[in-house]
Amino acid sequence: MLTRNNKTYFTEKELKCKGSGNLRLAPGFGEKLLDLRILLNRPMVVNSCCRSKEHNFNVGGNPRSFHVSDLPFYPTGGCCAIDIDCDDSASRASLVLCALQTGWWVGVHKSFIHLDRRMDYGIATAPGIFLY
Image (cartoon, one colour):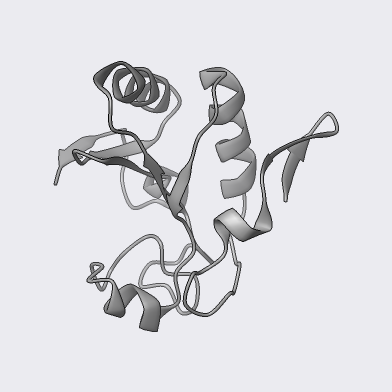
């Protein structure tokens, strides 16, 4: 669970791999996710967070996905990405703005927002945005 000041913002069930049930976040990722959630000040519905290599393959994820928690392609030590359900423009804009202001990479899909912390692990030097 990710909690702060005795309030739970994300549960283990939301964050763990839907295929394997494993939960392994990269060092510091949980704290940055909590910071973003508190800044946003509205619920974030998790679509996907941790993925095993096998589950990532089964859902058609990129082989170098930042979601992969077991044997990640990059030296992150675990999952450093999350996809948040988001299907209206106002919610999408608020989340993207908060994320970019706080150092997240953002991927915009019509039904979710991908967020990752690639900068924290030396994979990028500035926040960025991409479209699906």
